Image 1 (tube, rainbow, N blue to C red):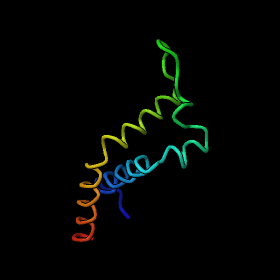
Image 2 (tube, rainbow, N blue to C red):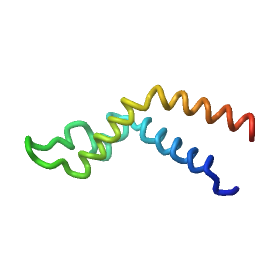
Image 3 (spheres, helix red, strand yellow):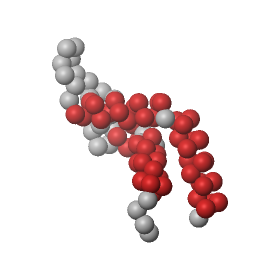
Image 4 (cartoon, rainbow, N blue to C red):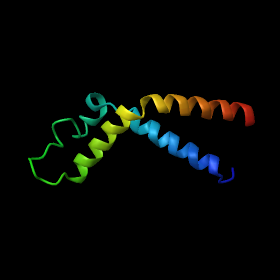
Length: 82
């Protein structure tokens, strides 16, 4: 399998899908990354853990509909051009 632009895009889509399906109560809370674990005080710089949790929440919120469209287009392209 050759390393092409399509495989790079497909890898980015798969990684974004992996982030989008993480569930806070079922998975993240079990490893100590729940909603209340990443809260800091007012004026404190957020730590790495809080920033990753914010990224996960943002991807789940913003990328839900675009991921459906991009996944569908990727599947159609894969079916048509193999």
